[in-house]
Length: 162
Image 1: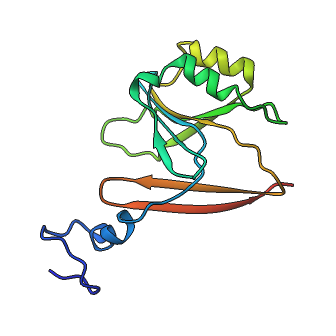
Image 2: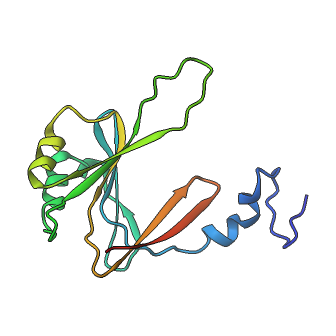
Image 3: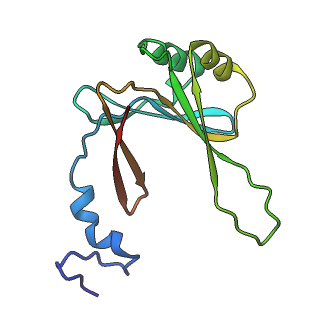
């Protein structure tokens, strides 16, 4: 099976992502990513960030520990006092076989709440902790990136702050 533009791998197609795989993944995507930490089983598991050249990097596993997170997140102070936020999925009490739309919770932390949360045991099992970046002007841009081994999807939102 051949795609219209001639880009095909030898294996059977798994969808539209295959058609554009070489076009997307053979380029480096540069983005300013605030410190972003994936928590699994209430513990930090992965830490991604971007360097000064806007290249997304991952910290070594041995450095993904609570004291390093605290030190890095408390380096910069915002006018608002917000240090970070944590995004987690709310567990649904669905009856077996029923579907309900997932709900997400966002918790914002100032310095005191951040330290208490970071070292406390009252965390959801899974979630994402991200450094809060204060908007510089009247508009704030949010980029959502969803990726898998086969596709990368970006969504750009412009938020007006009044």
